[in-house]
Length: 136
Image 1 (cartoon, rainbow, N blue to C red):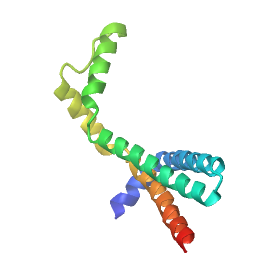
Image 2 (cartoon, rainbow, N blue to C red):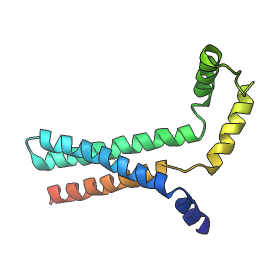
Image 3 (cartoon, rainbow, N blue to C red):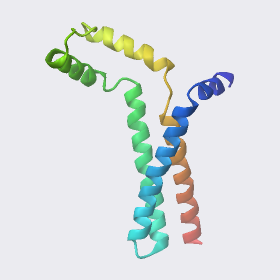
């Protein structure tokens, strides 16, 4: 538990900015659906549901990116642009070295998908509450 709090203190600004941006995205989606529907309850339910799904999807894409799913594409583009526009040759001669360096960097980086998942869960809870109120 101490490691978790130390990690949050170390990357507090990144988590706070991610939380605020995810909340703004979710509220934007919610308000769009809320004001476009004629029935406000249905618009609120649709808005919270779509915001929950969109933020969960974004968080999952960030998570698999942190696991290294996009490393081959980023390495290929980095090599291509370095060879086309760079003055110095790339410091990575092979993909294995690039992947090892990226995994070393990822271990000490923040896990922003947790902040996005937290906001998504808030929208999911709001959806469940609206569902209960509408059905009652």
